[in-house]
Amino acid sequence: MRTKSRPLALALSIALLASAIGLRGATAEEAKAASKAKAAAPLNDPLAVMHAKTDAVGRPVVTAFAAYDHAAIRKAIAALEARAGTDGARDLDPYVIAQGYAEIATIRRFYEKYAEDDMPAALGKLDADEIAEKGITQADAFAQKHAKHSDIWRVRGALKASQIRGMTSGFTKGPEALEGISTALRLDPKNGWALFAQGRMHYHNPAIAGGDKDLALKELRSVAKSIDNWRIQHYLSLTYDAKDMLPQAWFWAQKASRSAPKNPEVALHLRAVREKREEG
Amino acid sequence: MRYRPARAAAIMLALVVVPGCQSFDQLEANDPTVDEEEVFAAGEPGETEHLGNLHHVLAHRGDYEPEVVAAALTSVAAIGDPSSVALVAALQDDTDEEIRWHVAAALQRLGGSEARTVLARMATSDLSELVRSEAAQ
Image (cartoon, rainbow over all chains, first blue to last red):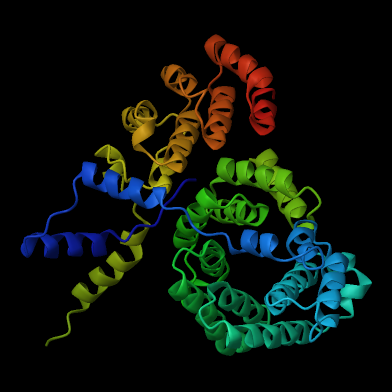
């Protein structure tokens, strides 16, 4: 059944108050113009910048994530860490390493939560908290030198979020993760990946902790307009699925699957949506 | 202030019931800022109450966000009224892949000779493999 929650009472109260103090709503034409202007402003893609600015040593961190190729990411991290302090080191390296650790944490979390039996042995041996701490150390070092770099705060927030395991750690790490995203968006309101992180947080969190799937959907749609990436498409599908908008979930699951054909998380979700469609 | 049990019960009931109500205000006003969920919720099989408004969305595609048009396509497909076919088919060459995919999906559900003709064309000549695949089903 198609349902939709809408706090009518609140809307009515606001409308009555607005009418009482002489405010008027925007006309359809004004709203349309505002909506188009907003849509016309593209978001930034810091990962595309990272891809362009790093070298062959660091690039697998950006490219191998789509296939959840943790071995390639870990190899790249090791090579970047090995050249720290040498003439070959690049200014961007700690940021790339931190991103790499955030990806490893994401991949490990996927196997831990949804496919424990398939967890690669090398990944299973890693300590989840330690992965995050190593990444945070790199992020802090980079942020110290580049205080106005927006995306390092998004990465730091993702690493903090990866440390959340249950409600207790959620109370301490959750606000720190949120702070990372907020700082990233304050430094660059057009940081598309920070907006994605915010949408992801709104998708995952329970309502009591600020979760809001309606908001998640709007944020993810907004990012998808500017950044063509499997992870955004995957989260759009997850969110539509959670809202029982199955045709939309199916479209985006297929999009994500074509963008990242070797990604096990995308494949798992695609199967789940397909089964739901067949049942329905 | 005196405690009034009946009033308290009414407020409690409103808090429980009101958020579950469905409003179609923006869709009914043909408001281009309507959100996709409102449009999607208007598509119940056989329920033609909002069909005119959904057709308005399809006929004024340029005024609406792609996700709203996609939701309108999903809704007219769910309602299943053959009068929607021409408006759906008119979007077969839309620039947005998501919309064309929903056009194919909607035509599959609506059926009929016009729908089949358009689907056959989309299955062979659409630029997107995803759309071709949906149209070919």
